[in-house]
Length: 87
Image 1 (spheres, rainbow, N blue to C red):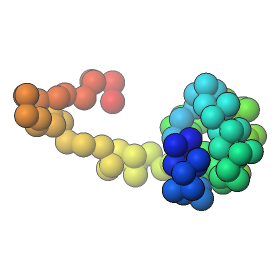
Image 2 (spheres, rainbow, N blue to C red):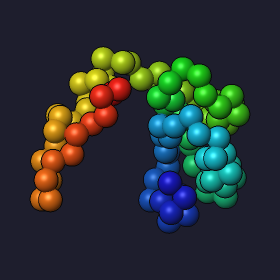
Image 3 (cartoon, rainbow, N blue to C red):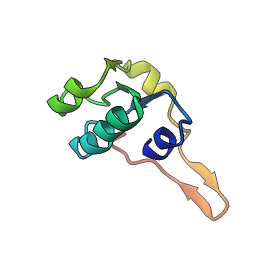
Image 4 (tube, rainbow, N blue to C red):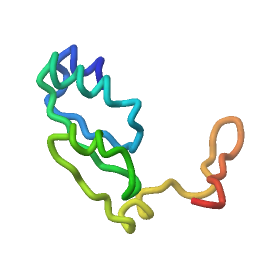
């Protein structure tokens, strides 16, 4: 996000995270580059500060997230990758 912001490669970024470690890079992108920030938190509970910092918020719909996952397993050159059972 920061690289794209500083290169003027985008005008808006949507963050899919609840991680408050992203507060500083988001503040930098907004203050230094004028980037518009959207937030799509993967879970309802998350960083209140992230929610306040975002210019807009998108609530992902569970059925869309489920339908967007890769099949299980995913074939790779070196074998197969399986998603965790909890997913």
